[in-house]
Image (cartoon, rainbow, N blue to C red):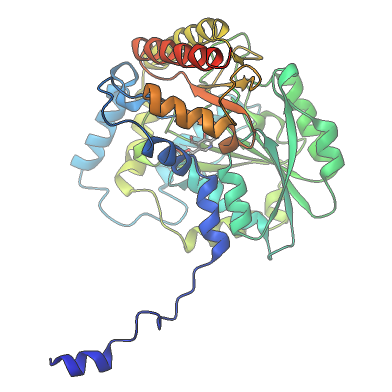
Length: 429
Ligand SMILES: Cc1ncc(COP(=O)(O)O)c(C=O)c1O
């Protein structure tokens, strides 16, 4: 082809018919991944100390958080069987749905059926689906989200044209939801409220009584409860984990979960949406039909991981779960004790669940720090320690610290955090 012909066929560089959605481009700022990426970009490559990752909730790289051998066996057996190489069904493989229903029913006053379970690509896709389905027509509905919270909900709501309204979690009440605010925010277009339990980012665990009040409030307002239980059973304080589904007959509950956290395999991408609704509200309102329809036009988790689920759930030994929770208890204790001795930050309550704790920055003590993002960028640059700024969880001038890493790395990271804070407290003395 001569140059002359190429010039005729190739459009000028500005002639393509694509125009980006500016709102979409802005949404990546709400993702933990992208915020941590920009913090890490400013790190000092000449620092030869190991980077201490206290920013994200994926401890799978640490040997003490290696997944259960039974889980690996289950996936390996599913692959070797040769029976899981086909496309799965939209809702997920029946044996996997049945075993998840059985597994979750152990903690409920009623029995779930396999038809209550929809398999998703991690809990993230469960959030994506639920937000898409609940949004309805653009502008039709609004959703109530906790603050601080997991901003993926906000991003998915915005992407679907659904307004997000925020109710506070109260730091001086162990991060309970402000249910008066929930009542004040709701109107005739409010479709649901979200609760994350055990909590990300606060590390709290809700009591039975508080969850009962949440259900009563939702019933009074005529809204569904979305219970994000991706950290289910990762509790190590006084309160045991109570699934929101226990209150499914008071108000209908969509439970979202996955194997990412409890089995420490976030890369396996297997999650679920479960309808906890003994009164059949989701069927009557066609929410179930909407979820199925959405699943027909979306991707599925890998078939062999779905195929491994029955063995994974049934064979994983209690010792594995106990060991994970024991390490989390130990690292939460280390975190709580060490944070107490650091100037410029305060921690309102000891974490009792999940993998995180929220700490408040006292900017009047940290004299050359502008805000939470500045704190995290300077900490990463000077100490190779990564923590998540509060702006990434909707809470300015706080930071979220992950304690789910190996204990010695955690001690190292917290010692570096301490010297960073004392250095920055001293500069302007
Ligand atoms: C509250 C919450 N929900 C959902 C997710 C996503 O879970 P998954 O890794 O299973 O997609 C996370 C991940 O960190 C989370 O913290």
